[in-house]
Length: 107
Image (tube, rainbow, N blue to C red):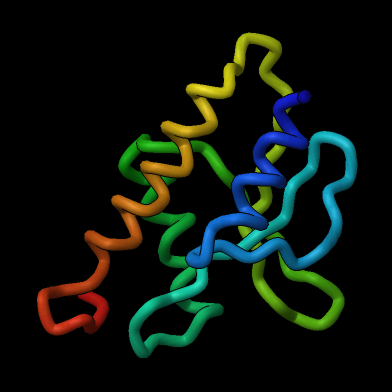
């Protein structure tokens, strides 16, 4: 299994993630699905910004034709491993969780 297929399978199996369009080669568009009351558009933009600004992960975003925001992962590094992808997704969950306070509201 290649890395892109591995990432797509991970996203499709995880209840907090959602694939919005079919994988296209190394381009994977997905979003975090919140488990608390927040605008999903805002959550994903803020999540991307926090991952980037803290240096935890380099992931971009895109707007689909229907205006939905997606996190856009490009798997271009030949040295990436399955373990690296597991770590990437763990950083996404940790960062998203850090963005809400104990009452379930975003910080």
